[in-house]
Length: 396
Image 1: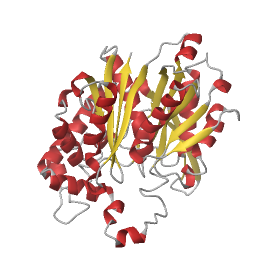
Image 2: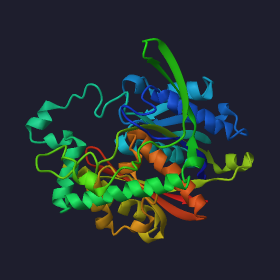
Image 3: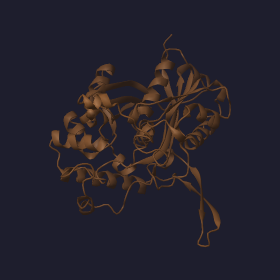
Image 4: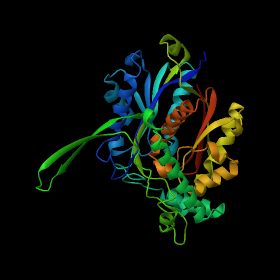
């Protein structure tokens, strides 16, 4: 019997720079477990043993993120062995994919309560993992673009869609300015879980010291960013290219989770839902222009839900690169006034498998602050190897 699935609670950590930021010594499973513990404190009505599953999105599931990290996070965060866990990988869409899976399972009567989100440490695990092993036969047959680095795909998008270096740098500068303004106005503080970090180091006399501090603020936005500074950066991925470190998303560490519940459990526990996932779609595009993925995924989710882009009150478009963000916004005629209103991943960071859940948390909180009740938010992103993902929430 079908039921409605609601988001009952949602929080994220601050996003730290990788590999030398505030979470560089904090494992991703610890980040996730602390986030879940915080969320459970906000839901004293919920018996942890009634949670049916923990679904964790992660883009590089190996080393500290391996061994089915989701099961370990469940054990650590819920402190019971009764709740299972599964790790999901759709690269940059993994966090949103996890929420979609949880929603679908609950809607079809397979569960009543699932914790879903994502966690990623790009300090511990580099882009591509420690041992990427491409299929040589594919490359030999001419499919080497399947394994292109994301920066090369951003260059391909810039070239195909005629996006200049100046446009990319201007877009990046605006992202930072919006994020800095949001921080100054404390737009993020209500959604962030405080994480205590312990650092061990040697002092000037080479004696072991331990220092602790609590991270509550996103580290990415740069007050010293300027158009002049951005223009002075050299292209990173191609000779004569236009994609730089300044107009690309930042490597980051972070975690974000939601609690997805059936309508009957929401009523039983006398909870007020935050939102519900109305629709979710994914689409494929040529891997060499993977950044254009949202252009194909958004129409699919609009058709699925019967909604239109003009029905959206807020849009979170993951800024993998300025080139692809500009290309998508132009192709979709996206309203810049409601898109990434507090900056995007170029300023805020992009902790891969966490990002889809993080953007969801941000949208819920921002719409609450704007009093946009019963309105819709679009979360969308490009995905490695030529994919796009898009989800629509109704936010209460």
